[in-house]
Length: 192
Ligand code: G1P
Image (cartoon, rainbow, N blue to C red; front, side, top):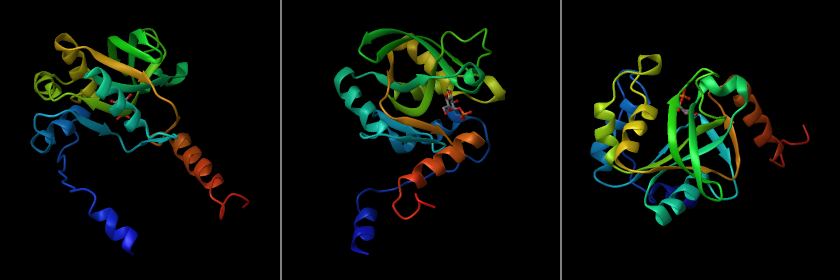
């Protein structure tokens, strides 16, 4: 009980509902008043990442070094390219890229590479004004990816090929794989 009580005193949790499904960019803008003028992390709950060092910690460490917005990325198979934000970058350091192009859910022909964004971002607060300038994009939603494109006109934005395994639980097979892989690691479940 003490352990659980201690967890609840570690952080203050504020939440806000996005009352209409107007896209990821719009959802993030709703949090502006909580974030204020500071860099902040975005974690998309349907991307589950198993890693020795939490993926967002890997990104915050790099933010500490470069002071630039930074997005987790990984290679994406051809048939999944149109499900993600896809980037092209110039390698700056091992596994770290400066993003030169970013496009939300492109066709295979439009995709600038096979590197896709994963739902972990550390962003500078300049993104909020960029979201305000962003018009409806893919799926008629206000896309974070499109706002990042505007941010790139003002600041460099980096991508990091993170260490760990990502499960896209927004995809049915990804969801099933995540459950089975995590169960296989549990002593009380793995044999069965
Ligand atoms: C969102 C983002 C997309 C990103 C993806 C990662 O898409 O819009 O750029 O690649 O998360 O999971 P969604 O999963 O909401 O379709």
